[in-house]
Length: 359
Image (cartoon, rainbow, N blue to C red):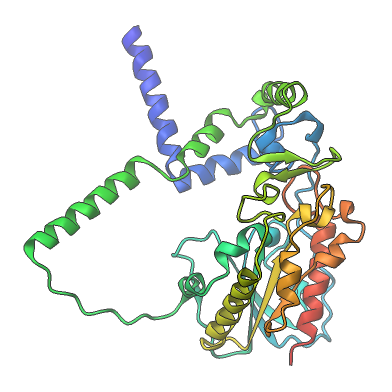
């Protein structure tokens, strides 16, 4: 009997490990969990991604998971551009991949920053092309650079001629490749978070997590280290957007030379894409919610504003900061790190205005 139980446990653990290490396996189980609203469904994102990290009961607020409704299509509108988007969850969690959203756009393709190198942006040359490169403030310092821009574009690269190697060098290379393959097979880069989702992210365990989180917050004054409660107690924020020592923080002191460098990066990226078949390049930098909602008793670093107002800047940038600050609390989810559909519509209005200015 003990051997049978041990065998069953072994099979169960092996199955969990295989699923948690497989992209297809995780896709299958997450789709099934998110489709359910009962005790066996996943509540990690249903009430907001920050609730799904913190499990604070005050922020167990039902989130509207619909995408922004498509506007009525006007036949008289002249659509003379194809649009390619390189963006993050601010766009793909709010919009369908449909040209009807965008002024003067005939077709649209969306690529994610998180896409692997198997999902490269094809170089364009035959039709009038515009590319939108969008990024949230907390990630822009790492993503907005020419090296990353080159990796995203599917441009034919000339193969370098092989360099003659000794037998010893060949053996070392083979051992390195084998070692890397073993590490990849044994440890998936997101294995820990995947295991947590597979084993524990079901609604049935939610109340237990809430009790623990509420006690830690209300008695000990602590939350999950990745999440922080706003000073007015009405919003959750990613800690990395608040802590001044974090690179993506809205409160990190920024020197002028760093702003100068970012402006240079944007102009290098624009030149690169223009040289590979695109007619127009538009950037959009999305502010961290904490920089818009202004709930904290300290001034932000105004990073995006300083970039947009830089005297040497020549690229087109859609900055929705000012518009989002109008009735700001209505534009963001209290328990999520993203804007809501009202906020998404505000951004879309600004982007469409920029499209109307194109020649």
